[in-house]
Image (cartoon, rainbow, N blue to C red; front, top):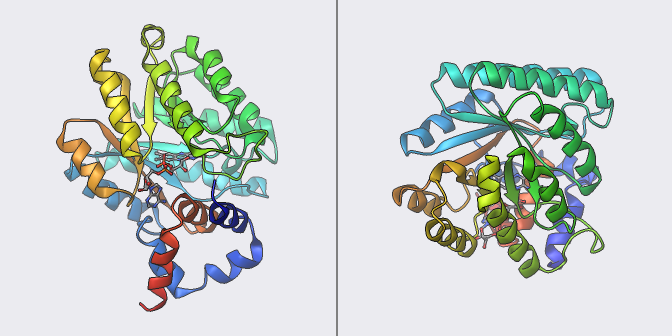
Amino acid sequence: MSLMRNVLLAGSTNPWLRERATKAAFVKRSVRRFWPGERLEDALEAAKRLKSEGITTILTALGENLTKTEEAEEVTRHYLDAFDKAAAAGLDAHISVKPTQLGLDLDRAMCERNMDRLLEKADERNNMLWIDMEYSRYVDPTLELYCHARAKSRRIGVALQAYLYRTEKDLERLLPLGPAVRIVKGAYLEPPDVAFPKKADVDENFYKLCVRLMSPEGQRAGALVHIATHDAALIGRLREYAATHAVPSSSYEFAMLYGIRVGLQKKLVAEGQRLRVLISYGEHWFPWYMRRLAERPANVWFVVKNIFG
Ligand SMILES: Cc1cc2nc3c(=O)[nH]c(=O)nc-3n(C[C@H](O)[C@H](O)[C@H](O)COP(=O)(O)OP(=O)(O)OC[C@H]3O[C@@H](n4cnc5c(N)ncnc54)[C@H](O)[C@@H]3O)c2cc1C
């Protein structure tokens, strides 16, 4: 993985940089490309626009690693309201949360209770709650949260990261549950004893994990896979697998990020594929934005161009 990626990911947790970058007008201008705004209403407006193009959505409020229990309560209430507002707007918009937003670092039991409240709301609204995957140190508690929730309802999904060596085994453990799994490559800085250092290995693992979920065994168990990538080659290979193995279209969906590879998004929908776009909104965008820059260091040029308006 490139040096630039590592530098940008290290910068994502730097308070000095965050303080300065979030005040710079040119950074704010460049973030707009991937982010509809600070308010839930901005995200709902973006979701309505996508709906008119045949694209469903997932909403997530930015913010992670909270330090006060009151903040976790506030985030939980925010998402309860988001479920209601998405329903009132007639949107097919799932909600996705980070366990550390619900207080995982502060009090595990409280985080579980907050997750339960959101899942009850997802059930009430016939909607779906997703759990993001964060740094590798959170994988065990996140999967525990997922299994606890999955015992109560099917309306819960979890992200698994293809860059982690352990993910193949984690998926085998989850498969009998007929899980809803979002396969992603992984967006955090992880050491080589934890994550594949070579992109080609991550890509191959991504393919294998998606195929496992679409396999006859995965299908019998009732698995759903969100193929969450902008990688046209992987998307092509997985479409080919689905077509040649007659995988029902109800058991997989493509998922991409708001504002990224919009042309590919439109093409997939025009070709009859199901696509869900994840819309991130809210004021705490700095670490998330740095991860987006790290995914494609060419984006840094976009920031530079914005210095000149
Ligand atoms: C719906 C969704 C949910 C996600 N949830 C999580 C999660 O819970 N945990 C987690 O660790 N990660 C998550 N991610 C991020 C993911 O791990 C990757 O970092 C991200 O998707 C980029 O990888 P890629 O699969 O698109 O492939 P890459 O090989 O990185 O990119 C493929 C191509 O896509 C384009 N592209 C990719 N990223 C960008 C960008 N930022 N700007 C412009 N073009 C770009 C480029 O053309 C690139 O060549 C999520 C991603 C998606 C789409």
